[in-house]
Image (tube, rainbow, N blue to C red; front, side):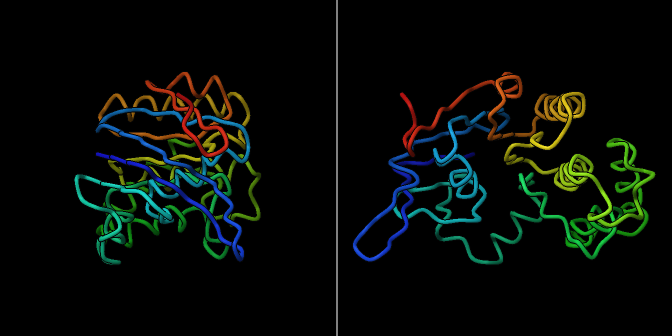
Amino acid sequence: MIKMRGITKYYEAGVIKTFVLREVDLDVREGEFVTIMGPSGAGKSTLLHILGMLDTPSAGEYLFLDQPAHRFSEKRLSDLHKHYIGFVFQSYHLIDELTVYENLETPLLYKKVRGPERKGKVCDMLDRFGMVGKKDLFPNQLSGGQQQRVAVARALITEPKLILADEPTGNLSSKEGTAIMEIFKELNENGTTIVQVTHSEKNAAYGKRLIRLLDGWVEK
């Protein structure tokens, strides 16, 4: 599914280059559950953003489904983000002007899912994540943990083939975090590919393979 060779990311300020990723090689097969770990500043989130084609590398080759990602058109990228890839961000990225229900409904509107099916999917997610009583609230009326649960539900509602998760339980209680990881485990067992960034050894144990980053390098 994913093949990276020599992925490097740096930012330039005059003649100075600040490297975030250095010569990263990474393969992810369909159906894998991969964990990326490392200290703050190691390049984990940057790598995840490049994997999700939200950012581009400064050098190197990235093949997604055997096709060069840098050649994807805007339409192709948009289609992948709508239909294939689900993102769970550390900072929620909920739409402040929309209710919980509307935030969950939005990805389905982009996919042109019909009304009755759309309503059913949203209601299922509200129930699964214990947010039925919060469906008419706006993000700023929710706790951090509740916002994170909505963000995870929104990422899963389109049934993506690939989930990219950046500290998916970072704002949750240990009980809530375990519940989210168990959902990820079930999805993976049913064929969903998952790549997660985490500081948690407990969460890392849910993955089948561990990749450690340090100063932008993959530790051998």
